[in-house]
Length: 245
Image (cartoon, rainbow, N blue to C red; front, side, top):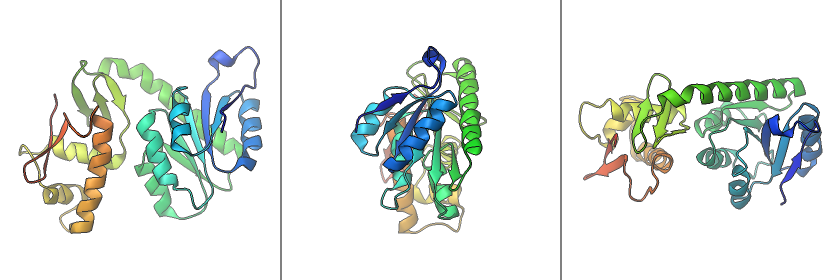
């Protein structure tokens, strides 16, 4: 699928926000193109294949709008893959499927969501809100960035910096980082991490597998080479340890 660019205000493209639209329903494209162009946005449109997404994010969009209504498409997994590639706000359009999916897309890295049916005014308001927040964050990040080559987790603001760049983390990933960084011991077992994050009553093999999946995702965000981690390491016996350098 070829990326398509649209612009609603001739001569002003350099200052218009660029929105990457990831959509799995071609019939929605005309509506989205018209809406975004009319309200002063440039847009790029792409399908859901991994290769397309990887190429699309190299355009450094200011915001990502995900609208993939087909049940066969894993919107949570798609959101997670996008978040691993961009720090831009991600706004997901969801069908009326229940609270669990809404929570799951936020945990996967979405900034916000809207539920169908929705009004154009609401959608545009959410987009502009997140664009403003992203702009404010960029203005305030430079003084907080750690020296190059180091790792820092700002617990108060829930921001993660790795080698001079900010990396997006979900609320659950923030809990994991906070738990490991504040541990009174040098490393923590899986049982200790599960109890600290999900409560003393949590446990079992299924919960440990869930923890491992999140640790794998977090390591992919933290490490240049996740197979040889520098910051989130696993000690003998499968104990997790967070190193600051």
